[in-house]
Amino acid sequence: MLNLFDHKHTTVAVASTTILYTISMLLLIYGLFMIRDILTLIFLAFILMVALSPVAKKFQKYLKLPRLASIVVAYFLFIGILVTFFSLLIPPLIAELTGLIKFINLPGLQQEFQSFEFTLDGVSTLASQVGSSVGTFLSIISSTFSGIFTTFTLFVMSFFLLQGRETLYKKVRWFTNREEHLEKAKDFINDLEAQLGGWVRGELILMLVIGSMTYLGLTALGIPYALPLAILAGLLEILPNIGPTIAAIPAIVIAFITQGPLVAGGVLILNIVIQQLENNIIVPKVMNDNAHVSPLVSIVSILIGLKLGGVIGALLAVPLYIVVRTVYVTFFYHPPAEKITRP
Image (cartoon, rainbow, N blue to C red; front, side):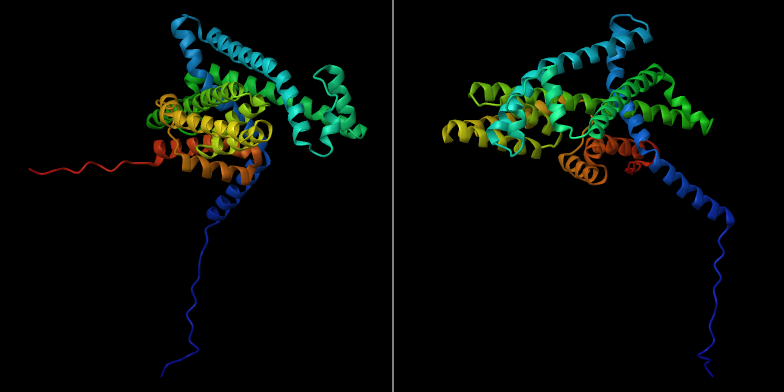
C-alpha cells in the first residue's frame, strides 16, 4: 500500500571554507566599491602611462636618452602641449560661448554674461554673483583645490608607472612565482599598452582632426560661434557615427537662423563631407595599428558607463572594455586547434 505521508529528506551540507570564501568575496567587493574613486584614479594613471610610454621609448631610442630623461621629456612635451592648447583656446572660447548664450537667450544666464570679460576681475565678479553664500564660495575653492590635487596625483602616479613600466609585469610575483604566469602577465601588459594606448592616442588625433576640419569649414562659411561648435564636434567624436550627427544639428540650426537656408544647406554638406572623409580615410588611417573597437560596442559601452557612473563612467567605458577584452584573450581564450586534413 502506498504511503502518501512518506517523505524523503535531503540534507545539504555547506563547508565552512565555502562560507568563509563567500564572505571574503563580499567584503572584497564592498571594499573595492568604497575605494572606487581611488581605483578610478589608478586606472586613469595607467591610461596616461600607456599613452605616453611609446613616446618615451622613441625619445630613448632616437635621442639616445636615459630612460628617466626620456620620461621627463615626454611629460614636459605633453604638459607643454596641454598648456599651449588651453591658453590659446580658452579666451576665445569664453568670448564665443558668451555670445552664444546671448544668442540663444537662456533665461537667467544672459544677464550674468552681458558684461562678462575674461579677466581676473570678470571671473571674480561672476563668481560673486553665482556664489550666493560663503558656503558656496568655500565649496568652489574646495572643489578647485581637490581638482588640482587630483590632477597632480594623477601625473605623479603615471610617472612612477612609466618609470617601472619594463618590470611592471613582475608584480605578479606577489601571487605566484611560476614562469608561465610571469610570461602571461608580460604579454598582457604589452598587449594592453598596444591596444589601450593606441586607442587613446587615436581618439585624441581624431578629435583634433575633426574639430579642426569643422572649425575651418564653419569659419569659411561665415558661421558664428564656430569655435564652440567645432569643440563639440571634436568631443562627440568619441561616439562613432552618432556623435558627428549630433554635433551637426546645432551648427545647422545656428546657420539657418543667422545666415538663412542656403548657408544651412552648405553646413549640412560640409558635415556630410567630413563624415565621409572620417569613415573612409581618417579613421582607417589613424586606427590602422590601434585597438579595433566596433562602433556598436563603443556606443553600448558608453551608454552602460553613463548609466552606471555618469560622465566619468562614459569616458572610461571603452578603455574598460578594452581591458576586459585583453584579460579574456590573454588568460582565458584558447583558440580552437586547426582541423587536420587527412590525405
